[in-house]
Length: 286
Ligand code: AMP
Image (cartoon, rainbow, N blue to C red; front, side, top):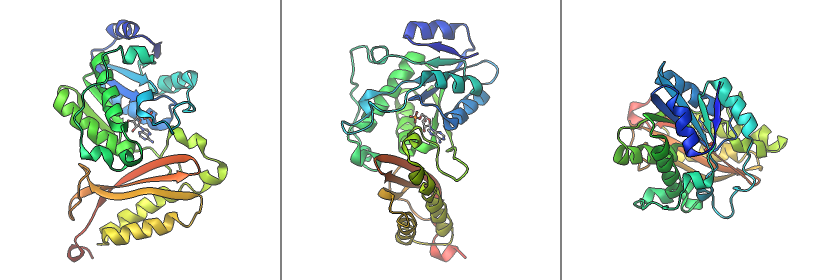
């Protein structure tokens, strides 16, 4: 059974009766099978003495003024069902007051990488994400926490923050769960019209093609050109950014695994995706 709790005291009480290997799975709710894979990984990793806490909190601070905070999908009843079938012990849905009791914001050191990719159109987003995860870590005090590679830039910043501030907390990264046509599962997919949903497979198709081209020695320029052409075969999708970067979000050299990262807009819906990529030196490929 999954216990649904709200306040911090209620959370601590629920946790005290459960296993001591505490694993936190931070989410903004609107749970889907992608979140389910995070909960599965948490359970496997935590073992018999595990206590898997799924936080369900739509953090207002990480949404810009023009973004979808008000209409972001919320359904606690369905979240509880999904958390339960994935085997979470606790679904914790705190209020803003539980998470931010007054002494916030934190003083987070700025980093030029906060301004690239997602940060380019979402000023302040990553400071807010680091802040909320820091706060969730302080309240839950987990042994480890699970994040999806789907939000790769977020995963990198949280891993770095944890290493600096909470090195006792292990960070587990889980690969992106996809629909049958390859589209990365996302709470925002519900916004897509059927026409938009029908062309959305072009996003993973183009990334897969990029990975293939890279393995044959294509240059970044050639890869980006092909991805752009593939996406542009539909006039329903518009590329926001397309970057090939190292795993610490700096320049990627050949012979080292990095990431190809994309954000697109389908109407008003913004979706992101990424895949690992290895750029070959032309002379090494055949
Ligand atoms: P969200 O609720 O969308 O903020 O996501 C909560 C966590 O679930 C984050 O660590 C995401 O990276 C992860 N996540 C979201 N979608 C997927 C997916 N399709 N596959 C794996 N993890 C995901």
